[in-house]
Image (cartoon, rainbow, N blue to C red; front, top):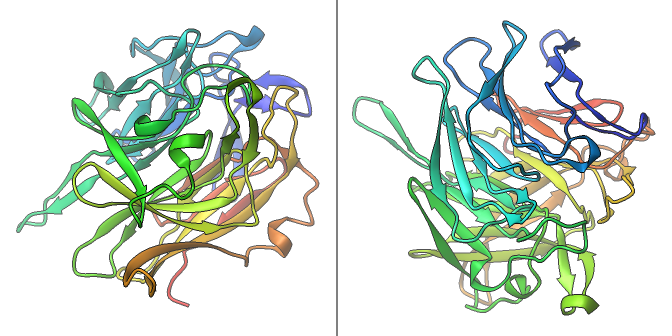
Length: 388
């Protein structure tokens, strides 16, 4: 799916990319033309797995409420009885093989539902996993699940999803109402969601996130395992901020990189760095790295530097890697998290061989920690990073 800039139409094409043979195969079309829909991998225990796809925007600006499960072995889509409202710009994430769909823009505002889709019992099942405190769309989500391993080596995953920013209504870019104040972030667990207090290291809000909001950013959970106790932090980049009040407000690209970490119960603290790559709507994924490495990396596909999509405007594709690490802050006398752009992928992070332009830049990651970034012309593979 997606919006085809060249053909000026909503696509329903589906393609499987085989990264072993470096080939692609057209498969059965989506049941409907869609963009701004959700797509996520569902582990059913088979060699191929399945794909969950649906919701999003259809033809004639009609919101879609259908969700399908695609089986690549049979090349077939089966309807899933999710029971969601028609919506677009929801977010989907895979945790321990299950798919979670969070929020989304509805005709009347934004959804507060969090759905779980599972196939581990031999058949696909769905359930309402939790309800958000604040309905939202155009938000970011990150996996911050708790993982334990018992004395027999049995791993248990307790799903936890951090939800950040977004908007509370369905409007064109630059017209939305951002999620502000104490509702800016929340943590979703089975059956509940709690509002997270958000501060900087000094107990304030130096980036005024709770006053400006943050719409359409990317967020990635990053496991910092360089110390005795593992800690998952969340790297956040891109998106756009509100400048000014209500009708007089304007929108600017987010110039900052954030790293959020938990500090006490229901509290997030953030560290801030700057970036020259101001992406309106990026996608990102965690790269594989050596265990106990002090450096972790996030691959970013920045499909647009523009905020408005009303005219399907596009820009040259930008790809880069973020480096996340602990650093000692001498003024605070404590360790903080630093996020910076590692400028090493290509000249000025642009591909000089590609003249393709895209609006959004999808990413996919495999079990080896390799990230694949889709562009208008090429697929870029970013291999795992280790210690320098």
